[in-house]
Length: 149
Image (cartoon, rainbow, N blue to C red; front, side, top):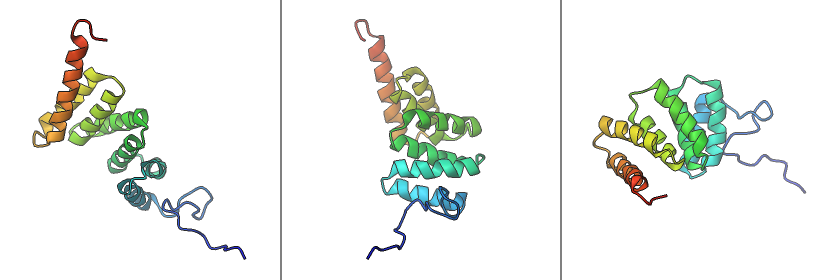
């Protein structure tokens, strides 16, 4: 005898309208952050895209989306999200750090160094910011050495 009971779905899919998660943007963000914490960044990104579409002015949602995109390996989308976040909140150190990480992974080391340097200037107490800036600057220096690719 088949079991017709619904199975647990961490994204909340199968809500009142087909293809739409149950709840609203705040609940979607909370579920997305839980998925991200649990290591399911791709599913988190899917849910957070929906939440951000409903609440495009929310910088908190945009940051969560950018993190999920980065962690799921969608670095180009994460860079676009972090770039929008930097435009909305130019004083947000983490936005500059995230954009710098993305740009370095995309091979744009000069621009990455600029954003990482801004993040370091805003938060000199964050050693991971300085570590990543040093790595990017070392890559830039190595590429400027004669005979380097």
